[in-house]
Figure 1 (cartoon, rainbow, N blue to C red):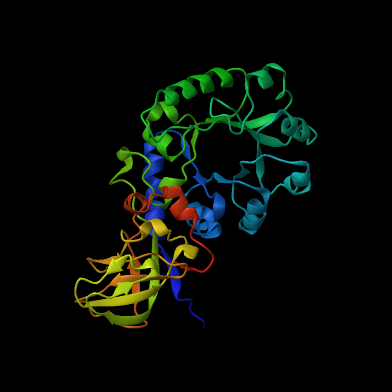
Figure 2 (cartoon, rainbow, N blue to C red):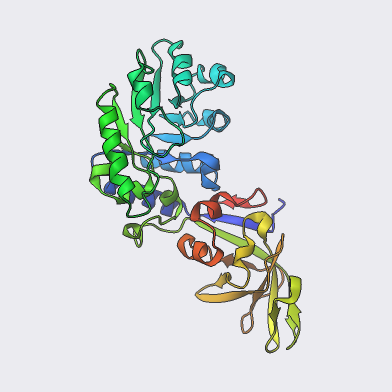
Length: 342
């Protein structure tokens, strides 16, 4: 069987442990899972099957194309964040998922599907998706069978007054609309405490090893481990350069491994001179610039040969600090050239 020279090792036990930790922090609220963007880059089907087996019952994707790809799994409660366009109605009416309505036009469109359940996104100050106070006053949701009213926190990863302001608006708006459940908290929102949990929480980033707030440090485990194969080993003599623009000059003779990994795989150029690979407990520095498909690693003093595999240092909080990219970008930026295993 052909083996790719780049793989993403996924830790199912860590994924489940993260979900269970977030479920505990959610208190009496059910804990769902945002699996949009192909499970934040890890593979939506793998994430969904793993978490469903662990007891998760609420799953969220962004688009109907994502929902269609997961239809064979027959997930218990699959929802589509981006609502329902005219172009989506045929698929939406097939029953593979439930729309999260975001506009008065979407609500009117769905009203034609008499008696079918929906969810509704309320805009509480983020000014992204969602119906506002004026829509509610105009009766935009009248006659709909609403399962869950939800909103989204804009600054839950910060100690911001906007959090409590949004919560207050959410409570006020939900008092005007009948629904079975209420949902406000994402991963960071869960860490804000029980006042933000309501009936259902919707973690995403923290499921996959991201730590959006300090309260989750030490609680959330790493799930994604990129591993790259060594394509070549070479000795770089003192005074010689490595990589584009000669940004690293060897201070002494250095053993260098060239790995099949680069910014086309989501290992962004911000890691240049800052990233590292791991060999057991040893941290092996990245030398020079990240190329499209290649990186150079200092393996001086270690037994590393062509064809070996090295794990990339990809603990999300640290990797974000090294690269200048957000933890979300690092996860979702991992491309199609990985063999996703685990």
